[in-house]
Amino acid sequence: MELNERKTKILEAIIRNYLETGDPVGSRTLSKYLDIKLSPATIRNEMSDLEEMGYILQPHTSSGRIPSDKGYRFYVDSMMADKEKEVSDMHDMVVEKAGELSELLKQVAKLLADNTNYAALISSPQIHRNKLKFIQLSRVDEGNILAVIVVEGNIIKNKMISVNGEMDDDTLLKLNLLLNTHLNGLSLEEINLGLITLIKERAGIHSDVIAEVIDAVADAVRADEDLEIYTSGANNIFKYPELADNEKASEIISTFEEKNQFGNLINESLSKNRTEDEEGKTGIQVYIGNESPIESMKDCSVVTATYELGDNMKGMMSIIGPKRMDYEKVAHALKTLQEQLDTLYKKKE
Image (tube, rainbow, N blue to C red; front, side, top):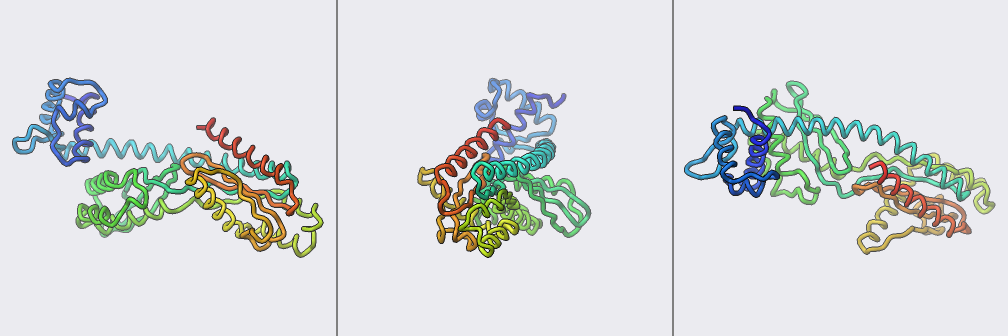
């Protein structure tokens, strides 16, 4: 007897259903749960074969079945093989797209500066309200395991965890199953103390490892990608007499060169955008003179807009010029690029 495709689907359905409910799984339940149409009689025959092959057990006198250790082993091995491939594919895709995106954002900044004759900047997209996609624990050597954490936006975070003594394959597979069963698809807010306590209790002597993994999950879900800022057209400032004063121009140019002061502007703009989204509004933020969160820009007007690349990946683009800037032209340029980025991203997807 071999584990063919139909038996595999039934075994996986039994395991997933049992993980969700904790109750033995019967043929009638499976007939509703499976994505293939089989009669309860056919399912019972296949379940008998799976029991004979050692993949499932019949507890007590119940008509339902539960996975055996052999069944768990098959499920976890299959799951982890799929996840390893998914991690590899995601990593390749993220590296490729990161390079493409960097060049694209540089071009956008230059286009804004050229089209408006003002200074322009654009930030790399940040990830907000992430949810966990999955976790993979792998042994590195006798005293260390690697936790690979994948969150929304296909962002991959790694953390090395020290362990006392070598952790065998069975233990790693059980910890992987425990973590993924309870945490996949959850946001940081949903990973509460009660859930953490439950997982640590079920991990037994490995609760300290679970604690470190959950800390890493919190960091990964909470953390944004490293913020990159691309600027262009800073020298356009010298075209406007009110900003061309040596001291003022020098401060503005220094801000563009150092870039670190733009963080507050980006965070404030993205925060206001999230509030407007919740209120059903969309639009452009305009900071005039002293309204600017950047001290060196108090004699300027700063106009910002956010762009979105899906999966809550949002960034900010901004145009900086004199208070007498052509606001209509600037707003039109930002709106046009918002739409073009959105269209370009959808085409790539």
